[in-house]
Length: 77
Image (cartoon, rainbow, N blue to C red; front, side):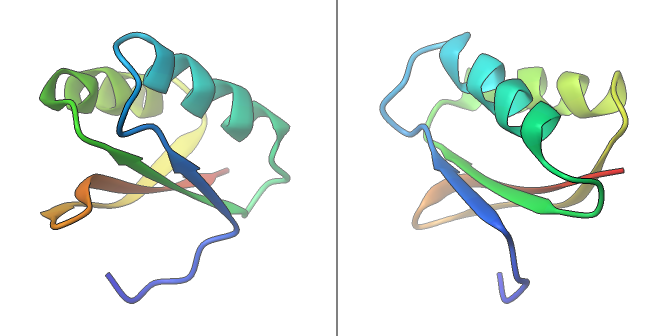
């Protein structure tokens, strides 16, 4: 993943629903156009974050699985 981001949220060691709640809190506080990188190790969080993005004014730029875990780049609209 070679894209830039403005804020990093590492929730690899958090259990559900904490990663989704923290993701929403940070995105709500970001200025429009800013990008949040979220890293999680819980597969159950993937669906929750996708639902969060779909139901709010956020844009999922990229979702990958790599050695860090499940990685999201989310932009606030």
